[in-house]
Image (cartoon, rainbow, N blue to C red; front, side, top):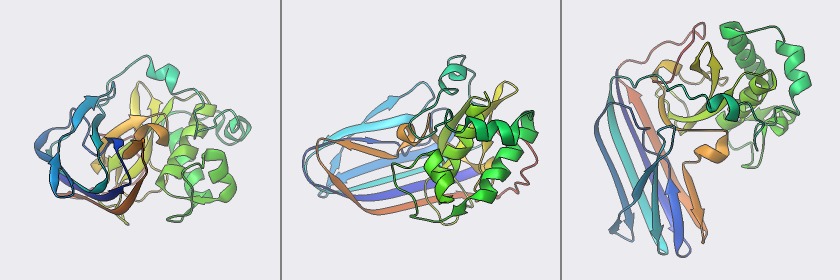
Length: 264
């Protein structure tokens, strides 16, 4: 499998800013070529790469005010090894988190999915969320969590993933969130999916059904959207003027949603 991904960002920075980018493919992907170019007012800037315990590659830099452009591109050949097994994950990803209020959704989850496990459970949760939400770009706020999404009955990929994660955690299935490049996604953007701990492995759940899970390429991993943001900033404000994402694969697979799929 050959996947080519890229991202282009244009930002206006109001002052001296501490920034963290999370747009590079995760550590472990078989990268054939890669580049990251950061320019401020036409001059190049360097970033320091930091890698977390899940292999998320963060690029941190401090910039003065001005117009910034960021260009990332990578060619990935083949697939990464499955996500490693870490006993700590089975503790961390059972807890409620900012956007995944599993404690509040406990009665709903037990009523709808009690007694299910494995693939039937993942299929049921994914279908339940898909059938109850409308995918509406721009419909949600960055502060919306799973409970608010369920009440509003609409959202984007992060909202679908938050609701899936909260429901799974509520019935004692560790679940987490991954940001991915998603060949086949329309409209094209950074994408977010859930991962569930099933039979000793992390399995992808995408209730939006907008891209085949087999071609997804991991960027970052965490409890919820707070951990996987593609850009965070401190000290000064910034305005995102343009964002363009591209993800293509040599052969787009068909995902019938009837099998377990790991992010590779």
